[in-house]
Image (tube, rainbow, N blue to C red; front, side, top):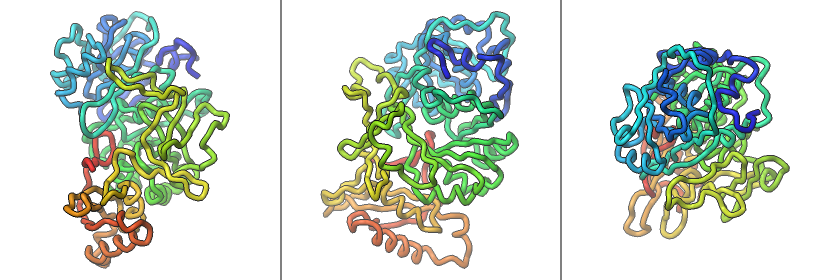
Length: 464
């Protein structure tokens, strides 16, 4: 358990230098080497007490910097490598950043006006002085919306590690990996789990799924995490069979029954779990029973650290893992007066189970009637020939909008013995008619070769 005032390095080195490894695409090192080495070299001291943008493009270099800066910097701002240049001025101003950690891939926009610029390297430089913590560091994460400027969300190391409270280190070290970038909340959670439990294999931006899974296989990864879209892409690649994890985790998007069943069929010996978490609310729960949704009995105060409730059909969470606040003079409150965070995720109760039905802001209005795209996708994805789908709106002069769907087929669908595309689209329409109200049934279904996934691993949804 993290003790009050402990830095991340102090936590890792408690009881002796850590023996786990951090593995990137080109470099790897033993965590214990940080006891006498640094990715920032002598320049680390220039960052003490500063508000620092961690803008190194290489994920391994950024990971090293996070370990070294916690307890040294007054504030760290975790910049994702896809952050648009136009957002840096407001980000720097809002965070009060006056220093920046960079590498060869950092955008020049991240360094404008910076008093101190320090270069991070995935190769450690010898460091004679012992590591010294001078205070608690604020961790600032960016929200991962697909449009507009990201919000800045303030965490502490304690809130980020809340889900690990009371968890003992496993008797045998584990090897974690994730499709996520660790500078996003979902990836940062796996980063901390990997450091706590043993080792971590990092993905790389734009790395082909096949290459990443090959590295995962070589490292004998035991635990691996990604969004449902990440996992659908992995299954479509044909490379998922290379790995044999003991634990498979989904988070970040609605995990429908189809993807849960597909992963269990692909990894029959693994525990397939889906978790709910958000940058603002923290980690809420993990479901391991193989079913979509979660038990209704989890709502209310259950005597645990996390409380759940459904108000106005959306899930709200009160947790010690929630963020402190949004940064910015005009930022809205992150928490309600009673401490709950409204996630904006709509919940439907059916037969003692809570099911996610979509984001409150993602509704399609069909003649005054609401359609949540995720609900329709969950039905379409149950068809054995469908790997993934994206439901969206199309303008209509009469109803304002109609529902349409893009569908990607499984690899088996290339078999010439399979029914034709027109037959398939009719089958999907009938499937939707049997499960959904008439206004939710797609008026048009297209078979497409791929569907765009954001750098955060989520389906890119157009504005409804």
